[in-house]
Length: 564
Ligand code: TEU
Image 1 (cartoon, rainbow, N blue to C red):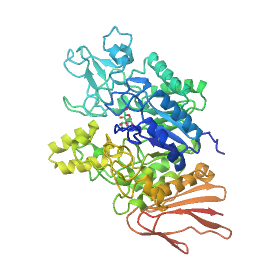
Image 2: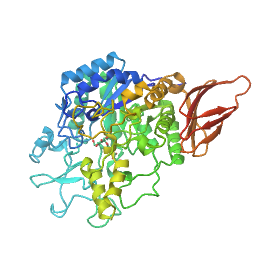
Image 3: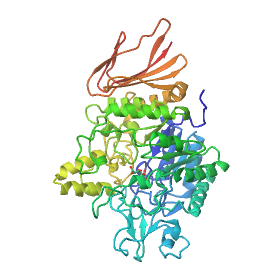
Image 4: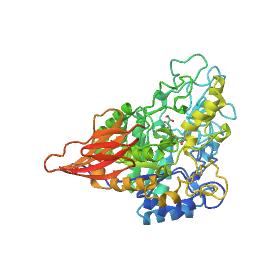
């Protein structure tokens, strides 16, 4: 028996506000733009929007560096527009969740500006400080930040260093301080009072840092390195999360909370999603996607190099998450987000088999048990942005990769190729609404760059019943049926050329068959038995059923429903 929580059946659409729709002609997307597109979002068949940060921010990290948690950044619009967005979304049966950045603030945040006044400041203990070694001359330790470089930055007065896991303009909050924990709860209440339905908790697995800041081992003199065991998934995080989630739910019991838990294992995910431990409804892990490391250069950052998904490992990972999360409604289901390259380019084939691979991947992922998270534009088969100048890459990791690759003798073209195919900048391009000069996103050049494509945009795909957009709608329609919400998940043991699974309720079986290769493949369907009958629910192009044999096109996919 499943305990059906209200959020089983959610389908989340990730709106990256800077790149979704510009309504005022400044080249940056805004809240009014999202309001104007609510009908489109509704017609997709989703029932929740996750908005990346829209709060006041100097935009060192596209809004994840927040200088005022309670103000809307003027580039996005006004508080009144945000209230209107929530209201209008609700009218359409769409819930709205905000990104909640709890690990750090902008260095421009008044708390940090106060903290910089020195050890006597009442806000000093809102942040994390350390003295340099050797009388202040050397760094406090050898930990590396996720945005490359040391985690330590000397404060302007020169007295101490402050800690930053991301950019130096993003000092980490000190969650060991109960005042910080209370302040973050108050901010969440402010937005819940405005009617938001929940939060995507940004980087919450980093809220605790190892006391005493011990050096990480295995590094040479003067070297720095990632030290996840000292700043990721530490034990007090569940205590902080429990306080946060349960305090919010005392007043707003239905608050939906999805935690971003990049490096969480299934065991950790279970505790983060346990109602009496961490209290998240679900978490987003990055661990599904085991990529082929063999072809990579070990001297360069691994996630910036173009390579293939290893389907064998990928199937095993998903199977493990499906099993561990079965009784909480399944894991989150996603292919990409604003931190990863776009799926049809990274994992599908964005040239020869663009349509079929995009459709197959949609069926493969979103008919599993769990909550789909779809990145805006993915439903059109949007591919990576074509960026061909290092100045077009905004993320510091991309800049570092480029410098290091060139220093190792890579050509400019080779370095740019890897970045274009793998960096997060590649997924942040303007939404393709039509094939006008700026793809209907804006009347001026978008901040992000844009691909303009005659066949891949909302207008063209609306008009074509065989489009990727229409296919996504069909997948999401199926996804809303009981069978695909609550049905048990069973992965078939097949060759790695296939990804095949069933969803099962009683005598009803949904069977999803995917050819994950660029070659045609044959698949023999299971025997029906005397009283069974089978119905084809959905397929992409070029497949053929002859008797019990399914001839799958390259990247072919078919979904059957069988009743025994
Ligand atoms: O990303 C955080 C994130 O990916 C890390 O928490 C992760 O654990 C680490 O990179 C190790 O793989 C979020 C946002 O999604 C991203 O856009 C922001 O830049 C970042 O937080 C900082 O707020």
